[in-house]
Image 1 (cartoon, one colour):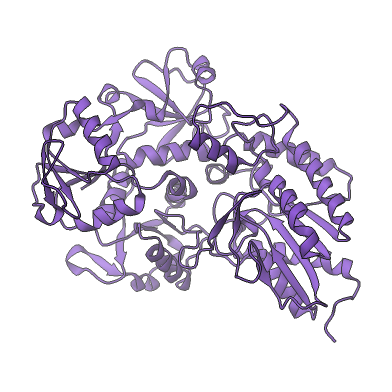
Image 2: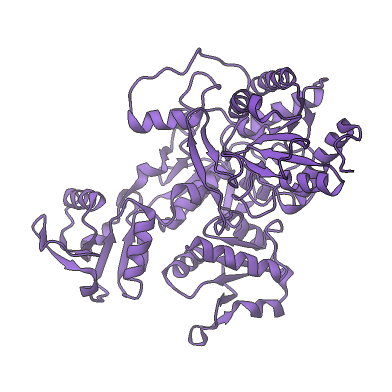
Length: 577
């Protein structure tokens, strides 16, 4: 059995736990608590949009609902605790980490510790404070006989015992996975710090897709070999009264009732949703690709995975640290920091593309719109070289800085910006939105709590900030002799009608209100600065594969839109003879 070391504190075991809000943030909190074995009683919807509905078979209730002292409300870390507490004077409000503690069931176990590095020392001190005795420690490579007065054993000496619990102490996720692999077949309770790294947990859509399948009456199948990962997922589903209709794996395991995954081809694919309980990311992607071949698809959300189903893991693009913009994509080796399409001939039309992760190659499984755009130009007979300088997380500031630095040397004829989404949320820990968040993260990591400067304080609305810097990019492009095209990219937030599934997939932090402002101002803007695509996908289906990234269908449509605009501006030039 696999468990998370920190779970619900004994102090709150008799409380009904409600999560504040029903959006991507609250579902991320739900996900973290679910992995920790914590049962959520419901969701509080202060907007009233989804009151009377449910999520994961838990009710969504009004903010006016009277909560007693048997209830507690959990909020996302982006919320103000004092502000939310003011809404519920009779009920205590907490951040999720405030209701967690070391699993008190360890006091009734024979406790072993696996790992004596930095994290091992922290766990040792923690358990001493909680009055939990460690009987012995285990290591992968034995180099000493004792540690903190405890006998040290090689991990091969570990023996099964139902009354024994072993804590895996490793700060690096990769080491945790390797250590779990060493004791995979040992039948005892195994404690880890986290089921998934926080980043990957928040990137996924596991419970959104499970909920969607339940509301659509689909059968839920589980991919896995009945190992501890599969069992943990199945236990969570059981807590929320969700049944697994069938199990599949890469090979049949008859004694466990597990079918070969290819047998799904004989089932009603449209009526099935598959959960991939596989923490090996490359193996998980292999399963996704097999499901695609059988008629399942990312954009239809008829499968999901522990790790993000949309991400590219087998041929993932690597990134490099960049001293100006924080990071760049390593590219395909033809120009450092750029993915280059074309032969880079002196007579070629040169196009520079700047954007965030929705414009990158090698991070998400669908083929990017920039590459599709290049192929359209090439097929239309144009001699063209495209420099794709997009990178995950880039906002308008990083695009502007790269244009300033690299533009004079790349000498593009056309500059394309596909942006907006990464300037919809307010940047934290800074007075001025022009700061690059990568450097703020580094400052806080290297000198936590230290004062630093981030520029003149500004309360400029986010749309106005994006629009102003887009105008600056246009001016610089024209100074370089290039024609500039800015596209305010599609967003699935603040549509006229948004389903509960879309809300839990896409809305987070302050993005809802900010996107409304973007939509309103962009619609009323009479300007040649940008082309407004923010609502372009509103009436379309199957355009997104996760919270903001586009499907193959979406990327194809974007590529065609950009192609039409660029071709119009070319006036027949640069065609191959």
